[in-house]
Image 1 (cartoon, rainbow, N blue to C red):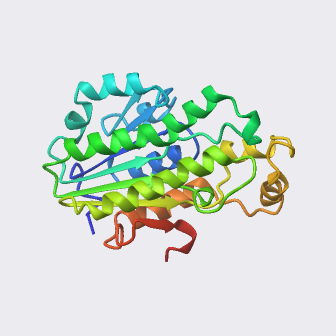
Image 2: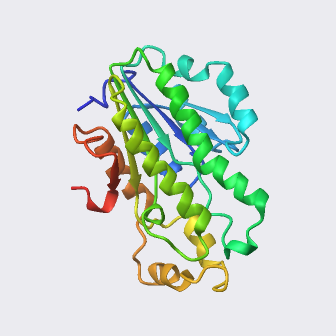
Length: 252
């Protein structure tokens, strides 16, 4: 298991670090002395001031393929990783939109969802593998969902994009890349803005809305900070990557 106290031997990249699980992951990693590079459309308002020197962030629209390509062309990941011997990538950024019946989904919204949920994490994973070639331990985490493993009416695009991340992890694991582990982890139902978005959607667009509303009413939503701590414990453990697909709720 990597020594998370041996800063700067471990460095982590987190997408969508400004809210929800991404914010919780960034905070928990920094609390362990792990340097973090946050990538999001906007900057986090307080992390930079609180963790000066161990935290960097870049405003990057991860739903824009050209912008991602331009940013990666400058080799920023190599600069951040440096000579770190253990490097982590958390592909967390994503969107639940578009929500609604198949024939009511706006094509541009479909495209943006596929770029943000699939193209961006696959592009970053490939660039990460190249940038970290000198590291002794490389670990990629896709933030998946139960929706990638179970179909939901009105959620076809989200289900499909999360299933794509699962299958990407399965395939990459077969490549037997040197010192590289990968796992697509479903974190469970978290109390985040994404859940609020589902509860605000009309039943005709998302028939399962009441189930998710009930999770909130009955206290069945997990605090993102608790999920982040458990996820990081697993990612830094020897067990990480033994299977390319995992559900956080089923981990010890």
